[in-house]
Image 1: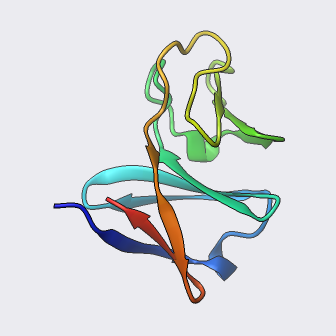
Image 2 (image 1 turned 60 degrees about the vertical axis):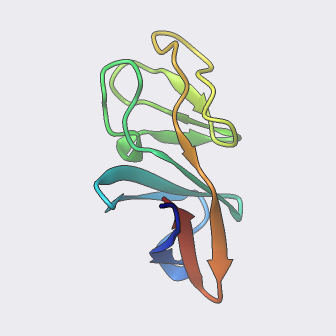
Length: 102
């Protein structure tokens, strides 16, 4: 059964930053890019590197291991060596809390 789970508060993830967390056994990276929030799986689809340790640019996150980039909005793989998309998660704000649909 799916439901929203509290993941973090807004003050924990400043613009341009991300936060690694585990919710219900899933490794997730929360991203605040220019005030827009995203939740994606925290493992590059190439070799499983933690994307929470990667680099943010305009609308993507880039793996620090081999440079694969992914669209923050869709999870689409934008560059090699990754070919498979990331899983993305719906999120919502409840006051100052960020909740993720798991």
